Image (cartoon, rainbow, N blue to C red; front, side, top):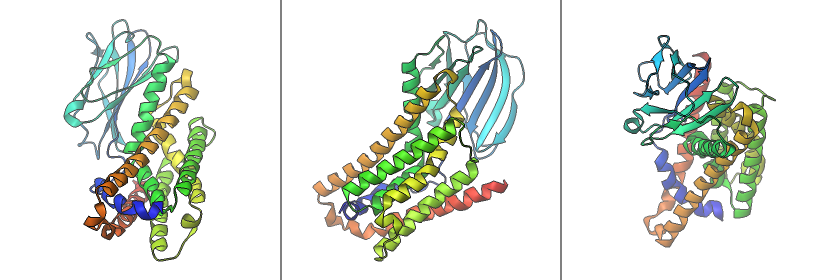
Length: 335
């Protein structure tokens, strides 16, 4: 009954996604500072952009007295405008703050990573309206756990391809028990490949993975259509198998996103654990939000609005936008 009851509500929930042409629209900016000596740092500054001329208007703000030792060198790669240069910070960054100008105006957040001479690292996130990122001499485990949990939550909630796949699974499942088993299978699968890829045990190029992730959404959307026509495929009969199989691919996608942020060398297991926990928290929040909308609509007698007539809308939307991603990502192989 779960799938039959939830589908009309999903039609409304999916309207939130309309107008999204890509799955990585909301990438954060990324600032990495690698210490070369006591006062010198290599800067890598990455901004989301469609091309070199459309980068967001953001600018790092370094401690007072900082000066450039070289001119920024710019390149464009994988949807990011990247600049590299060297700076000198009197007495180093420990105990000082780094800010990003323009976050509030653009509604963007930024990840900041500081790599010290001894190999220790600190990673944090600056949100719109936040003051700055404070560089600590020795960040504790609690800071690492908090930072990577937030990064995991934000990645899944802004990863619309992953959310559409989960949404499609929810739509095709017919009972609460099956839904729990299916979501658990997806979680276990992507946790396995996320860990293996992050630890360097396996390596798969990112572009093919992203293309197949989009294809996985097309597959489940097609299975939903077949189910509506009375032809139950594998995803209808045993959705946990489909969830597990494609979950392995989605885990590789999560690993690619985590690689962009990086892991602190001295806390890799901890950071990986809490990134994964963050992903699971975000996934649960998304499913709970959809179920909550359903119960509210049921309470307000939403059937009077004949929402059932919208039932085909989410299926074709999911399949359509995922098909676009497939062609876009495959075309990207040669760009």
